[in-house]
Length: 137
Ligand code: HEC
Image (cartoon, rainbow, N blue to C red):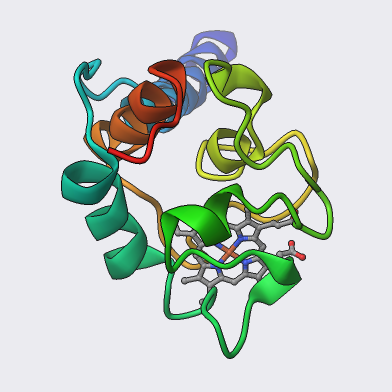
């Protein structure tokens, strides 16, 4: 009897371990795309914004005052919560734009894009663009 309980207990522990590692791997996968260099705003960053963000952050309707349509609007620094910290050139880890696309944003806002997530490579493109000075290139 004792052995049987032990066996059941072991099985539960095993299932828990598997579920947890799958969950953790998923999280890691989100932010471990290939590190990028020589990123261009127009060729690399803008297409990501167009595809995943502009539908809710545009000239007519900008959720939380963030407008993703152009270089100028992204850099305008007028977000409701992040203010002028949405893009801090050279500092991806201080930029709201990075905080909000990675798991569990420190700001407490929901992760963007709502209802989905960017791929690891897309996140790395945005990180690289900011790291390289957030240029209009
Ligand atoms: C389906 C609509 C939708 C999409 C798509 C979307 N957002 Fe948002 N966004 C919102 C909403 C709603 C909020 C407010 C979130 C909250 O209150 O937690 C928000 C808030 C934000 C903020 C906070 C601004 C501030 O300072 O308060 C940023 C930055 C942002 N989004 C960036 C993005 C980016 C980058 C993408 C694309 C990767 C994106 N969003 C895609 C709806 C959207």
